[in-house]
Length: 115
Image 1 (tube, one colour):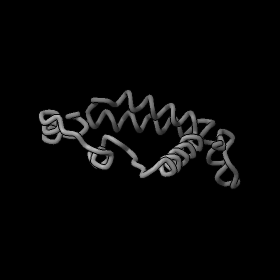
Image 2: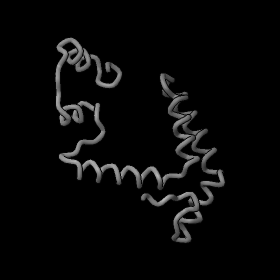
Image 3: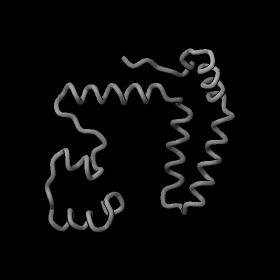
Image 4: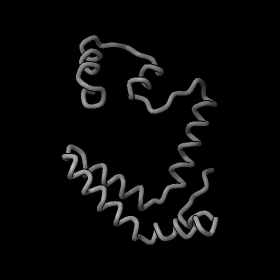
């Protein structure tokens, strides 16, 4: 909680056992999205599904691994690891397919249409 919110806000919430609604949870950074109703939630879910299914799977996997690697590392190390990751991904078959599909105005082979 302290790492997410900072010392002062985290301390206040933990020591007061504060209760808060979805809007405040969103404002604090505990919730990435809020919806007024089920239809709004379904719209958010569909947008997220499109984003996830439209992303290159190898790039997503590499990004997940990078996020694990950089946790708690100094800034210079984070930059080095991110640059290595980016360079590796840019010469991958997946990247070539992504660039080719862009110029050919088509979906990449790894694209999955959401249901």
